[in-house]
Each structure stands twice: as C-alpha cells, then as structure tokens.
Image (cartoon, rainbow, N blue to C red; front, side, top):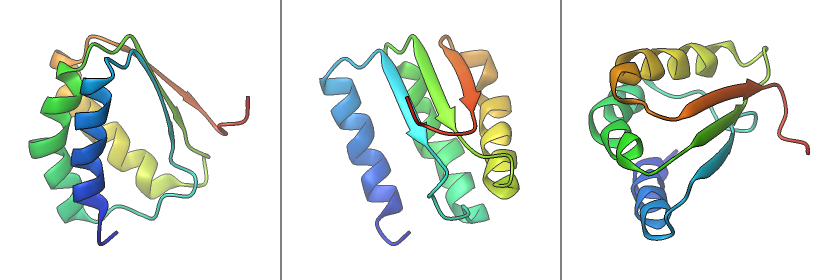
Length: 95
C-alpha cells in the first residue's frame, strides 16, 4: 500500500490518455483499504474517475471481502450524483 496513491494517480492519467471506456477492477487480491486511503480516494481520486468517458466499470470482489466491499459502496454512494457510467459487481474476474 506504500505506492497505492501514486499508482492510483498514474492509473487515472493512463485511463484518461487512452480514452478508456470499460474498466475491470479485480479487488480480490487488494489489501484492506485504510480509512485514510478511503478518504483520499473520495476527495482526490473519485472526482478524476467520474470525469473519464467511462461507459462501464466492473468490480470483481468476493463476498468474503467485506471491508473493501463496504469501502467501495461508500465511495460509490458519495459519488453517485456524478457517476454517469454503469457499475457492475461480480465475485471473480475470470472471463
């Protein structure tokens, strides 16, 4: 998690530069997010994400990953008025 914020910022720049329309976030191997990272995401990262020309975001997160599921639900709820893309949840990222 030491490089989490820098990686998240670089991801947004890359997604914006590539004009990404569809995203798949596999949260099953992602460590539990700290409250500080959740706050940072809501203030600094989500505004950039909702400005992307996304059509769909798919989040793979197992039902046993309760901490991150609640964190993600909270981020989505806070940003819901600005989210213009479809969000879908699945337990795994296997295609």
